[in-house]
Length: 133
Image (cartoon, rainbow, N blue to C red; front, side, top):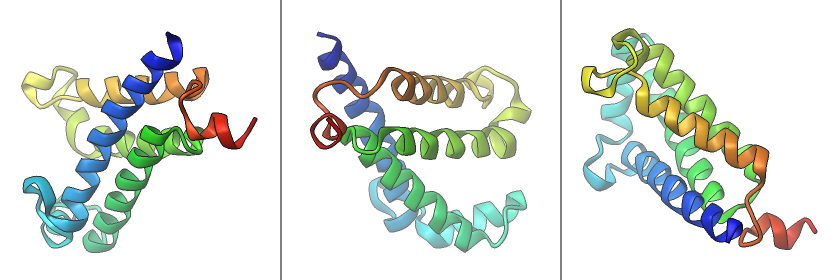
């Protein structure tokens, strides 16, 4: 049952994270694409905005998909954690903790899930379990 629980966690968090990446890369799911995200990053002082938006989108998409698949799980978790820490230190952290005030609450929750799965392992229903026996 633990492996099934880990699969549910990996799928929900990983695919949700990948969707955020595709918003940045391809304007899918109502996203702003590289140009819009790049302009936002520039306004935050994250420069060059377009390059950083591309890297963020690639990191979120790859990290999310790898996390969902349970493939290279420690690396996937690290990509998720780094992305969320950047969000905390550039956008949400200045608004406090609570998400209702635009704070970092959700970022820390996502970090906790990524670290927890990295420390626990992805479970039996993961590509890591098949490839790295």
